[in-house]
Image 1: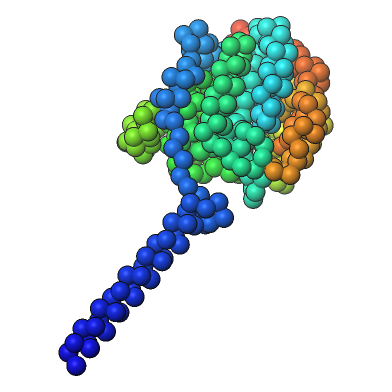
Image 2 (image 1 turned 90 degrees about the vertical axis):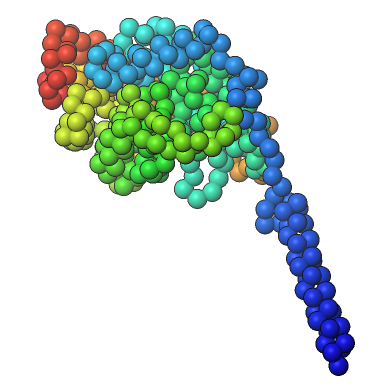
Length: 401
C-alpha cells in the first residue's frame, strides 16, 4: 500500500513537471514567434554608441548653442525678433526634407535680421488612437517598426539640417529617445497630449534648449502654465544615461520654458484676447515679461492649411500693432500643399506624392515664404513703435496700439 502511494506521488510530480515544461515551452514559442503575444527582444545601440557613429561636429555644436541662446533671448524679451519654427508636420521622406531645407535656408538668410527661422524636424508622432508613429519608430513606413534604424536615420536627418545652417526643432514624445538626439536640437516642445505628464515636465527640466508647452486639447491654458513652472524648477528623475545605464538625473530646470497657444477642439486661441490672458497667467506664475509662441496649425487652423494663413496673419497684425507679448510662431509647411493618406504596410511608398505631408495638412513652400515675409515686416513695424523702450515695455504688460 505504501509503495503504491509513493508511486502515485511520483507520477503526480512528474505530471506537474511535464505540464510546467509544456507551459514554459509554449511561452517561449509565443515570445520567439511573431504571431505570439510578444516579439523577441532586439538590442539597440546605446546613445553613446549612436553618437559615436553619427557625431555632432564642433561647427554644428556651435550652431546649436548659438541658436539656443538666440531663441532664449527672444523668449525672454531681450531680442525683438520673432522665432519661426517652420517645416513639415512630420519627417517621413529625408530627401524631401533636405530639399525643403535647402529652400528654407535661403529665406532664413534673407530675413535673419527680423526672424530666427528654425526647421521643424519632428521625428515622433503622438497618435490619438493608432497610426504611423513617426520616422524614429517606423522609418520604412511599412508598419514593421524598426526603432534601431529609425533612431539612426532620425539623428542623421537632424545633422543634415544643421549642416545646411538650419537649427532644428522637435517634439519630445518618448523620454528614452531624447538622449539619442537632444544635442542636435535647438528648440523643443511638449505636446497637448503630454503637457500634464510629470515625466515630460521633468524631461523638459533636464533639457538645455528652450522648451514650449502647448495648451491642452481642451484649450486649457493653465495646463501649459503649470508645466512651464514645473520645468523651470530643479527636479530629479530616473533616466538612462548615454551608456544605457538607468540613473537619477538631477535637472537644474529649463532655461527658457514658455507656453504655446495651439487652439482647441472647440476652436482657435490665437486672438489678441487669448494672448493677453496667457500673458497675465504667466505673469501671475512668475514669468513676467515672458514671450508666447503661437502654433498656427492644429486647433488654430482647424487642421486645414488654409487656416494657418488666417492664424499667421492675425499674429502679424498683432505684432505690427506693437504687441510685445508674442515671441514667435509654429507653422506646418512642406513642398506641396495639403496632405495624403498613409496606411503603413498597405500604402505603397512609391505611390506617395513627393513633398506632401502624410500626417497633418501643410502649406506649400511658396505660400510659407510669403507669410514669413509678412511676419518679418510686422517685426519691423513693431520695432519702429517700441524700439526705444523695448526693455521697459517687456517689464510690464504687452504693449498695444
